[in-house]
Figure (cartoon, rainbow, N blue to C red):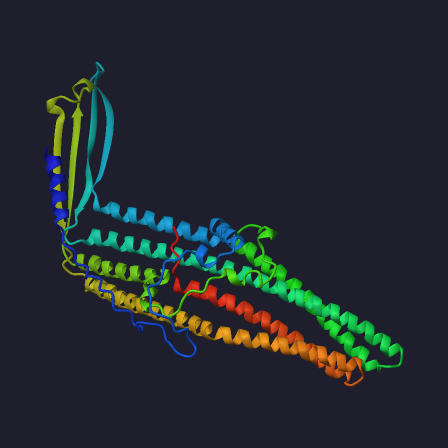
Length: 461
């Protein structure tokens, strides 16, 4: 009965404990209420950010399968998951200090006495509270709260890793498609250059064209052949990157054949969204929980300024005979309480409070910086998005004009009106314009992927 009263009293005192941690007051986001609007931005109506899945943004079924494989096998995700499991277990370890440690011991001894060999036996069974600190000032509860917030910050960091993996897989997949287009372009250029070399050689052998024309045609062919080899290397490296991100081999059937077949499969997220949407970015969430943990640490440091009260209790059974072990006279109980307070510590405990408060201020600044950084990243992506359509139109017009110029220059050379140098310059300009068009088409897709990533809108289960 005494032990029960001790335990009950301690629990009652802990339930009425006060917390010395300051309330966490999140500052208003230190950014404008909406994204910049102007010539470089897509001016759209203000709306709430939808919480969309990557399957809604990346609509190609092949890419969705590759992403699903990466989420299951990527080693960075596994590392993040292990770190999260450790953080959650650490919460339970810290929280255990809020409860009494109860243990039990049993012993048996025998003693021979006198010359006649009388044998006496002693059996004992003891159980009780080894030590229990009454959490009057919230030191233990705030320590648990701080650890819990850090675990939640770790969970948000794991979401950041997953978000980055999804975006990186999509970028690598789209880059592979662009490199397929560039390889096809190099092969087509090499084919045309080979035909040009054949015709120019015939003209040279017929005395119609000089030797310099043949050399220039061979130069174009060699350049195109070098581009083919370079693009094959790029494709192999794209596959290696995808294999690393996915954590396993990627089925070739899941790889795209070119940009034209995948351009429409990447949804465009709208601009003009409230900047409050940034509060759902996992890196911002992690910074918020770090701030909350820093506040709880202040409560722990403040509580250490006050006395520490510990309770101990012991309930046991002892008997000189096994058969009398549980008789009424065998029962005994003891209980005690200790209070301790350091009288002089050269200001160490108050310094710990100051340290915690400074760390809280740093966490607050980090939280605000995370929001400002997120705002800048989204604004940059929207700025690119606002001008991509015009740049892509200009690159396509340039490629079309270069194609016309190359055709006319070739015809003028064939008819003896222009020199082969004019045709050579036109062919080089066409190749450069076509490569620029592919690069701009890839940039348009990568911008949509980047905007998905920097908004951090995906909700992972």
